[in-house]
Length: 144
Image (cartoon, rainbow, N blue to C red):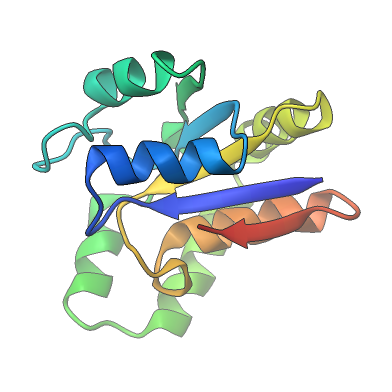
């Protein structure tokens, strides 16, 4: 089983859609706290329409989002280790959201987690992916 993640930073909508299609994603789970973007085409409704045209289901899972105070902390150069520990504590209270995503994977859906940052290593989506991998034997995480 695979779990993909992607950030749209620096990508056009066409590049983004092509990357998702290339690996056969069937469900995109948006793990942004707020599914809005200043970048045209990456807000919730536009993204759902773009993906829907190619048969990919769009799902927003706010419970797996990075809340503004933590986003601001990281953006201001805050310690990644502290952030990661704090966000993992938040994820520990989001069992139902994690289980919902995992159920999709177990049903055979090809799931991709979406957030903004191009570098997954500096994005909370890597921590969400890590939490999912801990729950599922053999789940391989691949960052696009």
